[in-house]
Length: 157
Ligand SMILES: Cc1cc2nc3c(=O)[nH]c(=O)nc-3n(C[C@H](O)[C@H](O)[C@H](O)COP(=O)(O)O)c2cc1C
Image 1 (cartoon, helix red, strand yellow):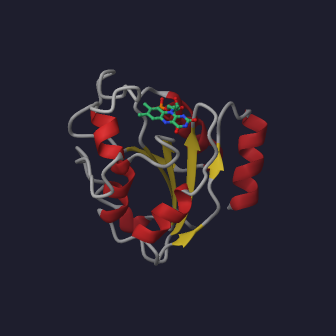
Image 2: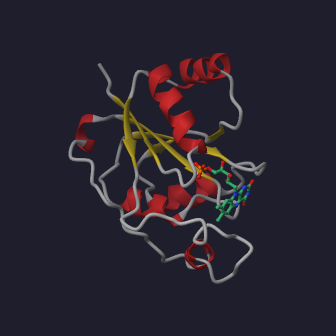
Image 3: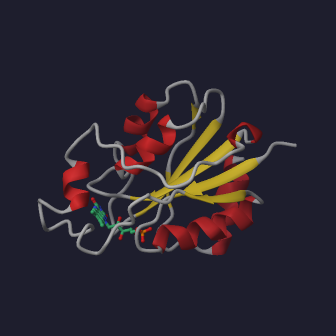
């Protein structure tokens, strides 16, 4: 049987809550992508050009360090990857995550939460970092009901 993983980064808990529901709906394991240095609320201040998130998101080469590695990525053939939208794309810690494992041939399904933005070019950017994976269309999961979540999971798996 194919094994599934929901890996997510969440700075303020919104993506975390939906990731937990998704893991249940998809019968998947759950892994939190935790930064070695947690983001403070000052770090997340998008109105300040000098805040940590602004500096990271304006540098395509930024790769914030992840605190813990997953030891058994080879066990999974489907990996949901969740994150908040930052500046219309995925936070650069997601780039760190994608570059930390051999995801070649695995099915990758992105999902995100936001204050209203859609996925935009997010998946294209992520795909370019990991072109040998089998990327599915990304899905915004803002205020998704359990029934909608279940239907999406059933359709995509
Ligand atoms: C640095 C930063 C940049 C953001 N950029 C966007 C954006 O471009 N579009 C948007 O709709 N929301 C944006 N948001 C809002 C988050 O995407 C939204 O609050 C998300 O649900 C937070 O998820 P989390 O609690 O899992 O971190 C941004 C938030 C932060 C902290």
